[in-house]
Length: 452
Ligand code: PGU
Image (tube, rainbow, N blue to C red; front, side, top):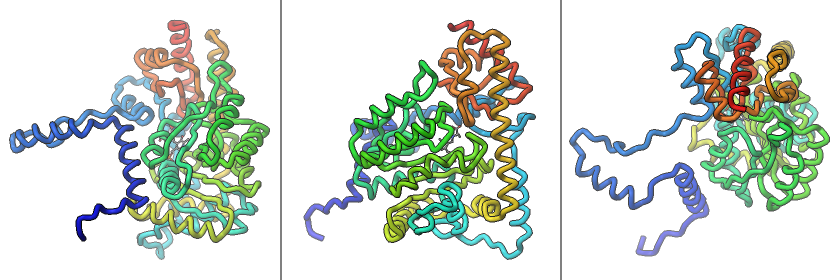
């Protein structure tokens, strides 16, 4: 090679934009700073100083950090309502009975080996996952125009989808609801998308800001990616009605937006897998394209197994095949291929009529227990005469109640009552039990009366 400057490939420019965005996002020091740093480090090398001496302490994660703080608290009455993880009436984590049965079947099967999965994951799992979210009679599945890959739970599936869009989709802006799950903006920014928000929640009504949503999306440039929570919106617990979904669908299609569904709670909102997938299925029924990221963390209680899927519904089988081939190029350098165990459990349950039926019963029981916690908390606040209207507790759906408590009130409840929750006032209803409701109600009552 002679002295000509190397051509910048499209992928290089994508990588460059991404690195600059990420470093802005993470608040990295300037180049000058790092030169100064390396000079002073070279002087001190060999004298017991780390090359990472000047690294900043990163803050704890706003959601997972709540558990870290909770674990450090020695109080016997402490209560963790931070992370969205199901607990039993006894306050214990739950391994579903069907999951135990499926694991036993896997262990008993002597023919099973631990070979690598293909880059796209377990084929049966992918097929069954697409069917679960899109419906058995989905035209897209029948016409083989869905590309599905196994992902590292919901988060990994979102990330793979976002990386794919950065590389292959012409509009690299994603609109996410305000507010949304705290990790969404980070996942999408680091994948190289530019993140903008659309109004979603109205604190005054503690309900959907439907007008704001329509206005903001109405002003968004055509072709943008739009992130939608398939059901049980996190953190607000507020979902559009079927009629509102239909209006959203019309707007999205008329502006040529690309819908990206995050389905982390299928079955948890209503207790029915089909009802909770209706929003996604409306967008498949119109023949248009979409992305859907699924998680089995909550609905099968497989949190730590990291099982999920990304489905891309395309216009034709030929396009779906090419999309899948490119998804493999995203996955291979990231983690090569996904883990086997969790996906095998899910495939066993989804592929066996009896296990599937048992699962729906266990899922409904979890959803029902959460609904009964809403009622109990609401009644407890009413009986204490706690100032304010608390009816949103029983109106909101899914794992969380967006209480409307402010940061100061949350800090007070943590300090005085050892109740842990995210600072935006979100509480995980799944972490409550009949035994702990009075304690929470006392804390809310005290917080609201003290900081009106
Ligand atoms: N999407 C939404 C809307 C979520 O709420 C969550 C989990 C995910 C995706 C990702 O879940 P996976 O575990 O990767 O499948 N949110 C929970 C769990 C804790 C966390 O923040 O990861 C929560 O408490 O918000």
